[in-house]
Image 1: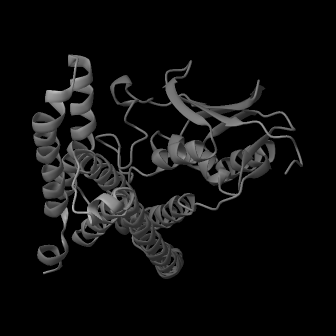
Image 2: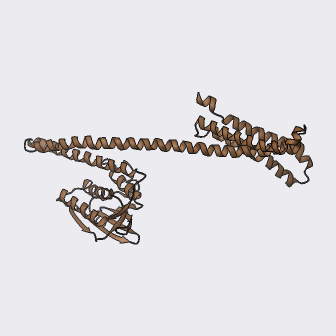
Image 3: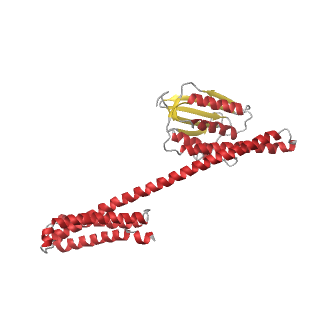
Length: 364
């Protein structure tokens, strides 16, 4: 109902058509016969038709645009307001002749030229105003959706994490009471529970990266890497972790940066046999970035999927993961103004190279 009554795009196009036809008619009947040269005649034709053509073209355009019917009606109001304003100026400039009953060619020419000019400026202003209103509505809608997503994530993180903790606790209590045939099933329960908890943590981190008002600060990457290396060594005693991490590596980041390297190290363990696996972590300052290399001697990542492995949901054919870990790594690196790439390690496994911008320690 609103579209049928308030959509003024047809009137805008009609006004433009009137200007074009009127301009051509005036030029043909009154201006061309008195013009001495072809160049002058063409100039007068362009002057009398140009802005009318702009109004006509924009009228057709907004009818097919993404603007709502109400916004299109607003464009029509702007168009006719501009037209009437400059028409009023044209009438004012010839008021004495009009009051005397004389309608001159100059007055008609001014009506066509200045009226179409005012209409064209009005349409442009109206379209820009309509788009700004539409963008504001979209921004508000996106903000509402983001807030809803944050709320749902917090609910999931709270409720499901508590449930998984309870499941793990009961599974541990059953360890001494399960028959040998059921031990494998119990291990599956514990592994899947841990995987769900990790997934919730990654999801929460991704939601936090959507914050538009996040503030970055100097972060001691040396301490972050040392903590993550120690965590992997504690959680997976069968994995050998070699590190070469000098002190004083400061980068521009925030409190989520540990998730980037936690996921890289966790990915190396999850996609390889932990027994006999070796992971090497090396970090160094290279100009205005800190380069961190995480390499392993596992099965590696096939070359044909390296360009897509950082996409959301991307995972190998035999992977039991959720396709979120490497996407989170890429997302965080991008948020911090850095990058991440993957190739082969010297031992044939995967080699990830992360670069993050250097920060002065203690700088704001």
